[in-house]
Image (cartoon, rainbow, N blue to C red):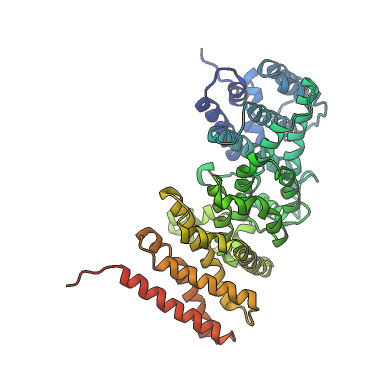
Length: 492
């Protein structure tokens, strides 16, 4: 008769087994990630299924029923995983926390073993596998930090004082020290690769669904996580401190920029960190890592176009994916959703969101001032092939779309801001006078943003620099006429 076993153990063994191909390992990693995102730790780490117990039921003796057999199974899977589990002596009379700790150790060990198998440079398959395991580790850290019991308290709080990023980094460090003790080595290559890729899984927790699928957690958890990652001491500072020591390893620059791109997509970053990132960003606008460099810049510029109401919804744990889903819901459910959004918008998050929205735009203008010459130079000299062209022009479009509306609203631009404003106007006109249809299309959105801002200023009769406003209006006219004439309507 067929007997069901543990999905978790089967996937772990498949990731460790010799002779498995890339597709099989990626499928196993995606299965683990999908289960962790969709169900609780108690259900997703279904170790007890291997001995005939039902997953999710109360387990009377955690050590005898779960930990001891699991250590034995890890001895079959891999020596590193066995040693990590065997050294894990801490036992808590809480199934959720116990499974969370052993799953974090298991995933960090799997990530370290994967990174040890080669280099991520010019190896997208290894990078994708590390990224999937890293996302699974980040999801586990989230569920360890914010449990069902902790968020049900008033007010909701964390179950452990250790931040999500620290839980991840400490688990990865445990794998590193265990491996080094076993092999008498101090090589940090695998650890560096693992950190560079895996840290991108932290901001991914706040990303709206997508290929990762729906994250089934209470919105209170995401609300607390959002506040945690936006906090200087528990968020960006730790995130940056994990990545900064790797800046000197050139082969990891692509992975680091990708992780930073994921961060700026959903979370703000201060100007001081832009200065720190420039040494690994600016050179790669002209290297084989051009895609990573432009990806980071484009993500930061596009994040500056997020308005305060969208930030409020995101900070409240109501991800944009849910906002997209509302289009598919029945009218009653859509109405309930709108009521929830309106209720959230009435709380104290609104002033903070407006401040963050302004902060993002200001940082985008600062980045623009540092890299605009590179963007314009690449466009002018056409330093790109057919595949790279769309990426370069998309970055240019996002740049002017985030900077021009912000600069035109500022009263009393200083000389540097005025120069930046004029350079962005020139770039917008360059986009709108292009000979390529795809590039022309990229001019529509920033043009609408600028026009809407100018129109709003005129309607509100808000005081602004008259010369700046006139230049904006003149540029809008030139761009609109350029787009109109480029349509090449039939003569008849």
